[in-house]
Length: 159
Image 1 (tube, rainbow, N blue to C red):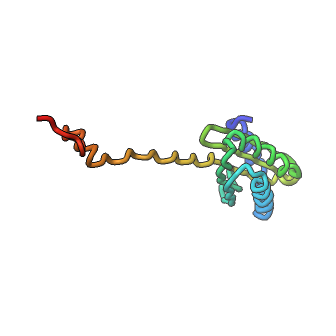
Image 2: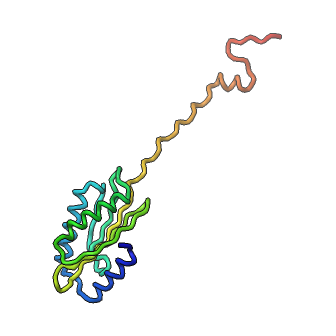
Image 3: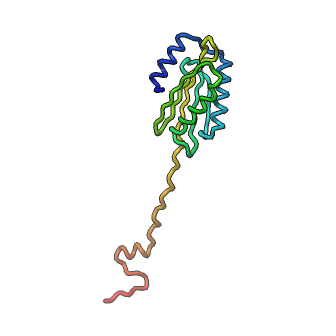
């Protein structure tokens, strides 16, 4: 689902339901964090909660060295399917560029429509710095004298 369609659907759920209890959000956060860490898609995972109804569970991750953001997006989508398996309803959207993976999800946890929203972003692994280029060795005094037109040591001058 594209982000615009997801936002419209999430808004409709939010207008017709209530936020889930913080304990439910904490349980979803813990399950998602365990899944993200176990996936080995990410070198760093940090999740938390906010009062923002659009992103009750938030996360920032850094992709593992050999994982591109789009690969992380595919993996997060699969993990989310497992994490959200026991909920009553779920919707999500994933967007990826070369420099960012963004995942947004929403679930309802009961028949009365209590919802939890998730917003997760991931950056690619840092690019390794190239090895420094060795500078040429400084010229020696003999080389400097030869360059200036002085005879080399041991050379004779014909008169």
